[in-house]
Length: 151
Image (cartoon, rainbow, N blue to C red; front, side):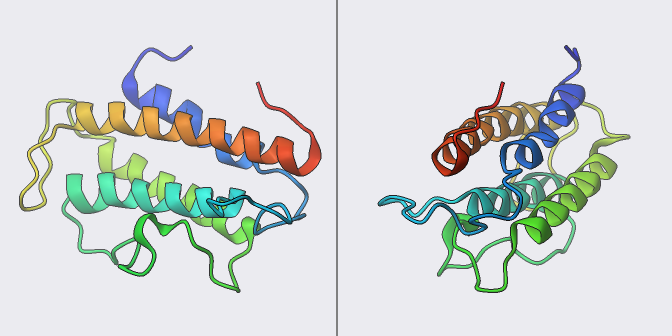
C-alpha cells in the first residue's frame, strides 16, 4: 500500500476503468438506473470534473473550462454523444493533468485560485475519499448491470 497521499490517490485512479469495464454494454447505465439516474458513465464524468476543479482550477489557478454547468451540477448527466470509453479516456487525461499540477508542489502549498486557502494535503485527502467513495458506487452499479463485483 502506498504511503504518500499522492500515491494513494494514484492507486485509485485506475478504479473507474476497472469498475466500469462492462464491454460497452449500457454506457448510460442499466436499463433502469433507479430514481437517482446514476450511471457508471455519469460517475466517471463527475470524477473527471472534480479532478479538474480541485487540482487544475482551484489549486493551480489554471484558466480552464468549468467542468459542469448550472443545468448539470456535478456533471453526472450525460449528453447523447457521451460514451463510456471516451469518458474513461477523458478521466485518464484529467488525472495526468492533475499529476502534473501536484508533482513539484509541497503538501502545505496553498491553492492559488481566488477565494481558496486549502492546502494540497487537504485536496489530496478530499480526492482520495471522493474517488474511493465513487469507486464503491461504480462497483454497485456494475453489479446491477452484469453481476460482477470488485475487490
